[in-house]
Every structure is written in structure tokens, then in C-alpha cells.
Image (cartoon, rainbow, N blue to C red; front, side, top):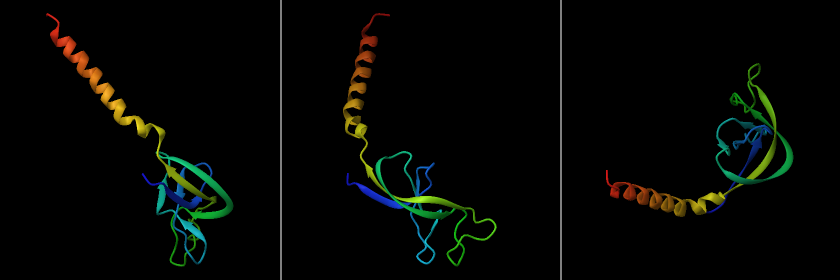
Length: 112
């Protein structure tokens, strides 16, 4: 599988990368985003600060006043990689199926 690189603004306590940046304001919108909690990945932090508008951008590309809820983050580039267990899933399934078949067959051959 080819490796995928995702770059965007990340709040340090989360594993969600916000990828849409309004070209005029430099503020990231809450959608679209990529959730990395179920992925194996490596990251390289550029250290540049960024702002995420958690309630969406208004028509001017800014956080709406009052309820905009801007959150500070850091621009990070993530490379999504194959998880090491992915290479072993097929042999693991075949082994478990073989053991299951062996025990089922052994049980049915015993006299009742």
C-alpha cells in the first residue's frame, strides 16, 4: 500500500488533523479533517502555529464573533503507514481456522 501524507493543523491533545485552510485568513476549518486514532503514522512537526475555527468559518473566512471558538494548534505533516500487524493477519486467520477445525473434528469423533 502506498504511504499517504496528510498535512494540517493539529491540537496537541488530539489525533485529528484539520486540513482545510482558508487562503485569505490562514485559519483552518473544522471540516474536512482526518482522524488518525485508528492509523499507524509517523509525524514531523514544523512548529508553525495555526488556528482552527471549531464552529466553522463564516463567509469572510474568519471565526464567527461570539461563538467562533478558535483553538490554537501546530502545523504537522503525518505519514500514514502500514501497521506491522497487517502483514500477519492472513497467517493468523489461517492458523486460528485450522486449530478451530481440528478441535471441532476431534470433538465429533469422540464417542458420546
